[in-house]
Length: 128
Image 1 (cartoon, one colour):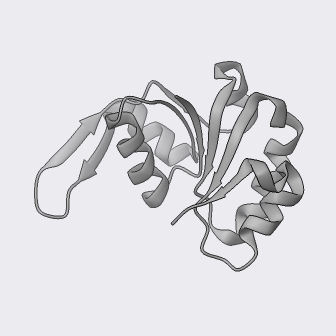
Image 2: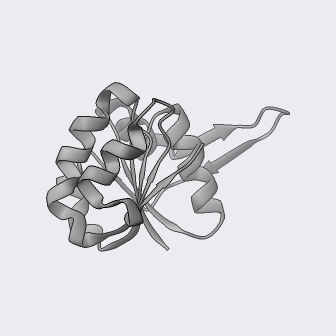
Image 3: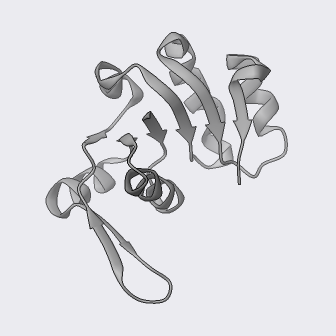
């Protein structure tokens, strides 16, 4: 699957690393420090019981607009903090035709409802 992961921080990095290890193509959208670190040294995940994963994601971008040429995407995975959800949905909504399912990992009340207003309830999956 081709997956657009928006919010490549601690949670997004963990989810994206697992998606990569499962054989998916993941395009990470994150802030400049994340992008700089991954481009310099790859994606590193320290495992809770010792050991680490080290991989270089195929694509790291600063914005959804920068990632769109890598699409279309089977899914977009939202790993932004709940307070940033509205801005993220506003950014991706004009590009909904390039995104299949929208998966939200927010734990805020109403996150799925807000996503459904932009994408339609049938295209939104709540995750935790």
